[in-house]
Amino acid sequence: MLAAQRLAEDGWKVQLFEAQATVGRKFLVAGHGGFNLSNAEDATHFAGRYGVESTRFEALLEHFSATDLRAWAADLGIETFVGTSGRIFPVAVHKPADLLRAWLGRLRELGVEIKTRHRWLGFAGATGLRLRDESAGTGTGREFVIDPTATVLALGGASWAKTGSDGAWVPLLQEIGVPVAPFAPANCGAEVAWSSFFREKVGRAPLKNIALRVNDGPAVRGELMLTDYGVEGTPVYALIPQVRAALAAGGPAVLHLNLKPDLPPATLLQKLRQPRGKASFPEFLKKALHLGPPVPTLLREVAPEAATLEPEALAALLTAVPLPVVGLRPLDEAISTAGGIAFSAVDDNLMLRQRPGTFVAGEMLDWEAPTGGYLLQACFSTGAWVARGITLRLMRNEE
Image (tube, rainbow, N blue to C red; front, side, top):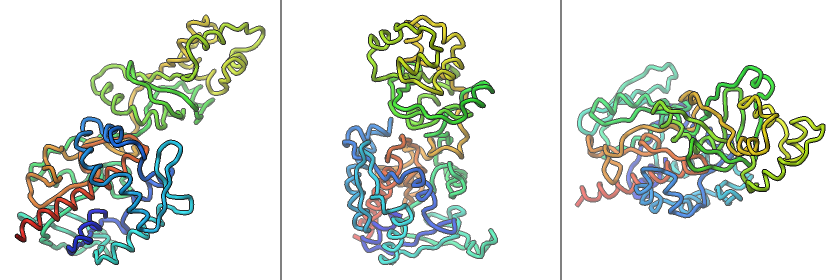
């Protein structure tokens, strides 16, 4: 949609085809848990959130940054603010539907022709596209071919299939020789083999102000949610690439949970050496460290002898509670996906090398990033980037 807007603003005639009954469905779903558009993090750290593709994203973010996104939203009448975490949100009165409504209105003002319930079926010849008009709502309809001067494919990854992001496009790209890395869940929950007792007693429970790491990796701070299947939450999502890599290598993927990351080790040990008297283990943890339920149950789950440990051993447990991960949640539950079209398959303008004139943007490409505004920003930035590439290409062709 941003590519369509930028191209229309450059004076090109633009048609936007959408397989669903309405456009922007995943955009709306992404806003359900807090409409986090981007992040105010400095450019270097921001680009670093994209891992091995950080250098590439430096250029993408320079072209369309978080500041540019805020200005774009403001131009649509949607004011934003930076939260205490650095995340960028619309002000409280604005919902995802408000922004999308204003955006669609702008596209129509620019003359963008939006055709919903039109499904892309594949390529036709050197530049053509096969489409099917399903507007009758029967799933079948008239098939036809268009021959655009340039094409942008922005078909999403493979999570949240109900929004249309189902990865069904993969065979169509592979047919013309485009390498596509298999999709894998990203920003998802991690499964831990809890006992039935733990699942029944704890269910869903938050653990605030914790730190989490994978094996001996760096720690991530935040809030963890214990669930009946394992754990989820921002720190878990940030560590999924390392968890996935450890699982794929066949080695252990253990999340180590620090329940008191702000407490110096010496202070923690001092508090644990206080006499317990007649206090029970849960009472002692509550009084000495302000650790209430479900912490005692969690400690006994991973270390049945936790209540009888010496202070030194208990301190070690509290700062590295082992949570062995046995798997990741299903792909369709993931907030986003890893995998997709390899960057080696596109040029610097994100145009397919196998099909000149066809550009790709968003989650179709093989990148991943944590939650916190980085996902939507990447989609916006790649959309703006391909619009730039198309305009440059079309202007060269007209010379």
